[in-house]
Length: 231
Image 1: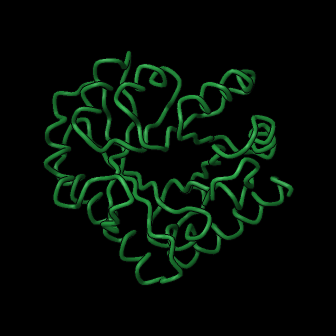
Image 2 (image 1 turned 90 degrees about the vertical axis):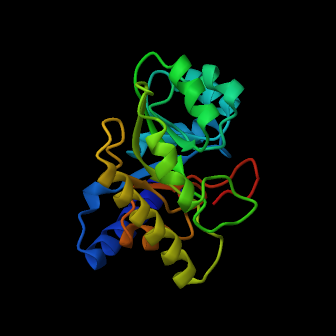
Image 3 (image 1 turned 135 degrees about the vertical axis):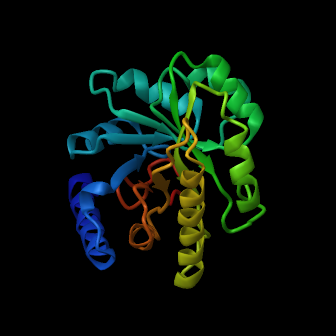
């Protein structure tokens, strides 16, 4: 599998999706999800032109961070973040995609040396297997972070169901966009909330059509060397 060719194919599909939605492809950033591949494969993604890498565990992040320190990619923490792990990753990531509870926000506030760009994770599909807030919890949660000067809510994140039902997917993505707009209406100083982190290998074109600004691509970009059913 050639990562460079995969990336070109993904960019072509992003461009087509943006045309359908009257958007500009440059407004969509691709995060290469490298949690199931080696540091060498991650380096290949960087060589292909990827700037953003996503990891979901502190051990994987720190391992690749050391090996790829000469490249200095933009690191995203995209998995469920345990409160006790915040101190391990906080100085190494530019974005956290899984802010979903006040205790985690408090720990980020405590440990961060400067404001951290965070996405509030929303469970738009209401699947019990997924983390994230319900739609009703989002606005009260954001309001509760007014005094957290080290947290900047730059957007919302969701994981849609693994399904071929386009209507169901669009409903999840549209709900996230509506919630994003609601947060913007708060005009809260630390919650500009302009971004939407949504869309993976199986559904990213639909996510882009519905407004995604960050898409998280694993298997169709870098493959799956270790196993684990990466999307």
